[in-house]
Amino acid sequence: MMIKKNATSEDFFILLGFSNWPQLEVVLFVVILIFYLMTLTGNLFIIILSYVDSHLHTPMYFFLSNLSFLDLCYTTSSIPQLLVNLWGPEKTISYAGCMVQLYFVLALGIAECVLLVVMSYDRYAAVCRPLHYTVLMHPRFCHLLAAASWVIGFTISALHSSFTFWVPLCGHRLVDHFFCEVPALLRLSCVDTHANELTLMVMSSIFVLIPLILILTSYGAIARAVLSTQSTTGLQKVFRTCGAHLTVVSLFFIPVMCMYLQPPSENSPDQGKFIALFYTVVTPSLNPLIYTLRNKDVRGAAKRLLEWEWGM
Image (spheres, rainbow, N blue to C red):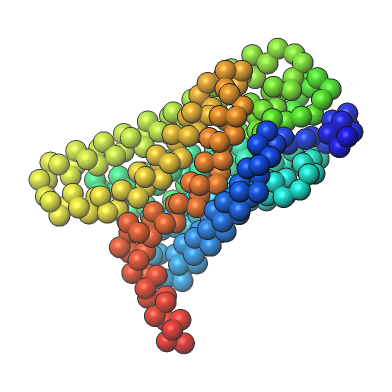
């Protein structure tokens, strides 16, 4: 009755989420809550550490703290709503809430793609242009690059989310996903959505494939520079400083490519939910662990912070 009532109201959507597997909802609630708390704790830790430790006042950790803040915002834009829906029978989201959620999910996702490119350029400058690094990555330029990531994300999202919500719906409001997401919303349309699907493919190519190509190009140049020196120490340093970023890039881009680089009509809704669950829940929670475990500077800063706290 709840679904029938709300599905006829233009003020609400029903986020079906994982209602096809009601026996899994409690398990998913517990698992997702744990990952969400890990995301909040780990990324806040990175942000605080980068701010209070003077050894981390470098471009690399400035961008890392931006990435952590992006991950916090990205998960918070969808996961609390998912937890509420998993906890009880009420699975509604207001029309305005759905618009806002779609806008922020797109904006923060695009901003993260751009920021990961910026971080790869920082590593390229550090390894391949060490003598000019302080000039190339001047603090003002770093702030400009970080701001550009946010501005690009929020500007492009405003255009694309508006284009998505202009599509007329077929009366029902049953969104077969756990958050308001473009392919799921396009399935509600009662008109031809090929133009929207083409727009989504073009945007995905621009903000997923092109950033990925730029990142791989940067690391290709880094690899050539290191191999040309024939230095084992240099190679170890590159793995230490760049390995964490490459791991994060892989965890973010691979599921996003699986999700968005094919037409929504050819995307399995159930498969899409679990792919989206990975890059919205799992990846942001793993990023702080990856940087902490594989980065000597972060481990050292964490140790100094703990020693200072115990000393107090």
